[in-house]
Image (cartoon, rainbow, N blue to C red; front, side, top):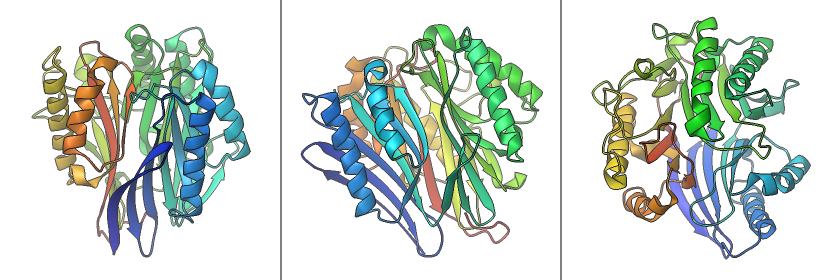
Length: 384
């Protein structure tokens, strides 16, 4: 028996959206989006409000849940990250991602947290965060970066280091990695280096157009240090059988990514004995020829993007009702009012955040990614 629900709480200083997937015997999952809502407040006041709200949730409504992954969205990382990281060092409890992608409600900070109940966690010596339950080990990585000469070299080092991290845990990139995120400073210029390095490293790991790739988002975003052009977040699972992992293609609406020179999957779902988890990559207004659809029209691009995501979800046996969170990226801040209105009308209860982050192709005005879960009974696999 499981219970799925969504709710929104508002206080004087924050707005909180919560998705709950609660299981009587097993692992419960929660997605929480916490938004500062007072643009006139200082960054320190907004940060304190968000962190206080999170702590109150942990102590009360989500008591017993542990965070497995956090991502902070900041408006000015160079001036804000140090204070945040100092605060996080005092209460570090999970994989942590901090990226400059300004919240579009005019505030300085927003937070997405993924929490679970019924799991054991620890920070591994190589920096990955392990979440263990039953026969599975979930390995989360947040905020990996280096200061190599350019985006290509930085991406190559990031991926090679990650391959080694997984190998130390008895895992392989091709077998275990479910999801990656690449945040690219000045994405219009530096994304090409990311693509080149990823393509070349993937070939060395047996990831080709004839095998499979990894679900991913490659999007504008920056680190506090201007020398960092690429930072990476990751998620892998140890203990899965190959038949538990399925890749999504939606060929009626989307083309294989390798046709335009990149290497990621449109989406992935993973089956466990008691649930199906779905991960939709960054998805934009594109057709099955790889072309931008409705250039210059934010409303029509949003609708086509939703259509694409809906087809991917349907292929996974899921719907928008199964989604626990959405992250929406906009190239032009002037489109926020229109897009937020569209989302509020169609998805009023799904936890979501809107941030300023250019997509990897200038013609795309909007992109979204999402995660979801639905119940499943499959005695062939162990429960989550």
